[in-house]
Length: 171
Image 1 (cartoon, rainbow, N blue to C red):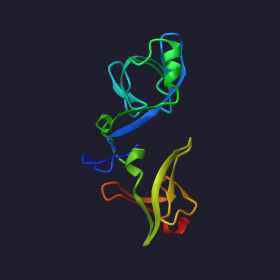
Image 2 (spheres, one colour):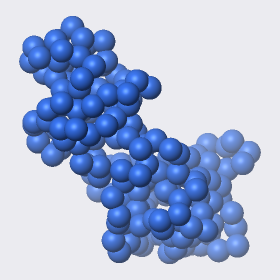
Image 3 (cartoon, helix red, strand yellow):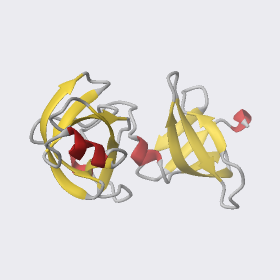
Image 4 (cartoon, rainbow, N blue to C red):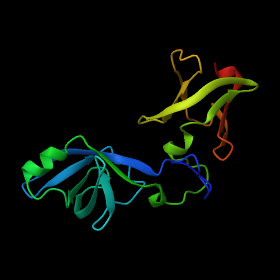
């Protein structure tokens, strides 16, 4: 997650919160794969599934593995047709953050610098169990550099200026 100012012109209008996974039961419920929990998903939550507007009808499961029923599917066969579709919400649904938290969407597009040297731009943030990793791609499309998003490496994060600084001696 990320600490972001209220004015976030770099954010896309819609944020991916997961993908429709396998059906659960016979009533059209599905697993929501990849949901990190930053945006609460409960009955009445408006989402888009594969570009189609939908509303969450019911929610069960765990925080790590939610099971939702969307108004787009009323049975298992309907749920199966949604499988693999991205589930998005309005960027305005992102909650405020505190301290040194950063939403992945706010880090993507930031330039990465080691001192005066520009390494490239964050093109993805990979979530691993120990820590997140920034995937940084140079303008020349060389192989991306993977930078652990940890205090020992990252010295500066300024999403409003779109800059991430890392230790010069890291590379």
